[in-house]
Amino acid sequence: MELSRFSPTAALAPFVKELLIIESELSADNTLIPDTAVVMAFRFKGRTSIITADHPSIIPVAAITGLRRSARQIHYEKGTANVLVVLREGGIHAFTSVPAHELFGLCMATDNLFRPAELDEVSTRLSEAFDHSERVAIMEGFLLRKLAYSAPDLLVQHAVSFIKQQKGIIRVKELAASLHISQDAFEKRFRVLIGATPKQYASIVRLRALIRQYPSYASLTDASYEAGYFDQSHFIKDFRLFTGKTPRDFFQNARYW
Image (cartoon, rainbow, N blue to C red; front, side):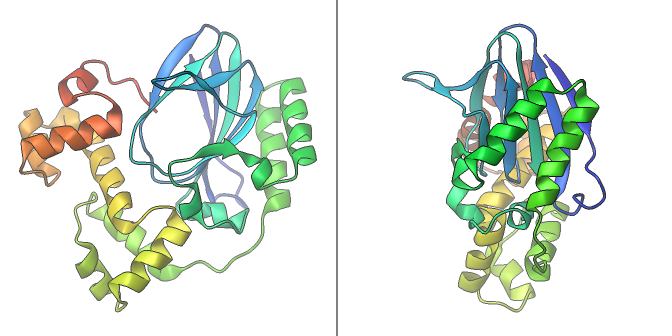
């Protein structure tokens, strides 16, 4: 499996974190752990599916996925290739008026958000493109046509920055008070823009920070304490939901995106 990363053009950079092109010459499975922003996916070769306990769920050619609490297992058929648009927190509102929290836990076709004819055209052009640079240009052209200015919510942006700075270890009530807003109003405003409640978002930030910094800790216990977990059973339960594995099993072969 090959992963190529591309930075967005300047006009998209405030809303798009990066563009990824994922190619799988052979059949492969991969774990997607929760992340902090919405992702759009455009498949131009092969087929991908979500592995579930019952049966695989085919991912649409053009799909969008919201924030979520749990890991997702993805199967890539032989000869599969996708372009992923990884948005920044709140970036989805530059392209659609749909409240971000309505996407929570979902992976659905983007024809609910954009005209199917446009999506078909993008998919065809991606599959016919000469190389990845051309594919990135096609994808950016589509996004630029959809781009609509909306004034940033500075309060929510500040909250996101603070939660990241604190590595997800925060108290929502105290954060709301520091922003001079009621907790209820803050939570509603935050989830509409970001796609999760402040508590859910902070949990994602906290566990991703733990995973990223795990090699620097002397032990798994130290890592969990540093992440604010003082009950090991609670930590293992949260970690297993987040990654699909126990901490020890996950870190023995930590393949994920």
